[in-house]
Length: 379
Image (cartoon, rainbow, N blue to C red):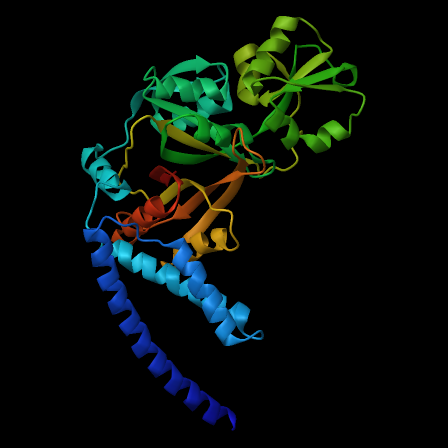
């Protein structure tokens, strides 16, 4: 056969396959009704495995792998359809709809906000960008921010999650497994580090540089160019600047913002210390309750997936089927387990999308550990 004849034959096969697919989905509709009436779960892993093995054997060795992929996709489609047919049962979509109804129409300009560090911290600048007039409560650690929000001591909290040059702030992602909070907004802040010391100090006399580990990583090239200088990690860049003042030493310097130089009366020894001028940190604003402000187009999820081939692919394929862009995928080890991981997803999603709500309900019912962190906007 020539190419046109092959294509004509494929078209005829596709027409037949479509009729069978529609018939299969009609039966899936009946299955969904039966399972709902008898309070049975949508998924049946044992039956799916049985079908995969049977069909792979029937297809023969050359096509066994392709057949398994085809039927795995059919199972995903069938489960998604059955979930869509289920009556609402107070799942995550119901909570999201309630949050839409209960959340104020405008993001607050004034609020109590937990921030890690001290005056002059980059998280303070992020809080001011987010709220305008935040009432800041300073805490010593990222965990302190999460605890302050979780316990209701502050309405909101600000946490850095990733840097454009130095990557993820792993400690913050770990907090998402340890504490209950929701993301209500995110923002990107330009970071401009400088080397600060007491007035009269000189770079050639500096013996130690202190800062937060993220800032030190963002200035790695500068530090490598001065191998004789001791590098010490402290809890925050602004805390480092304050420590330089309190040390009364002219052989110690801090990597922090120029604002800290003005705030603590420090001299700028160098304003060219970071690896790249295009240095941005992404911060999230968290709250205890689920709130979804108008303009929300970004979703964050925390998921645990079963230990089977294609489990991660299956979830990503669900997002792709709806045309959703996966913005970030991060894996973090699960505390107290051996080589088990939870996956953090950031997804671009249309505001109030009914299809996305159905997908979230589907994921919640299918996965053993599903955490919806928020539907929010980035500024």
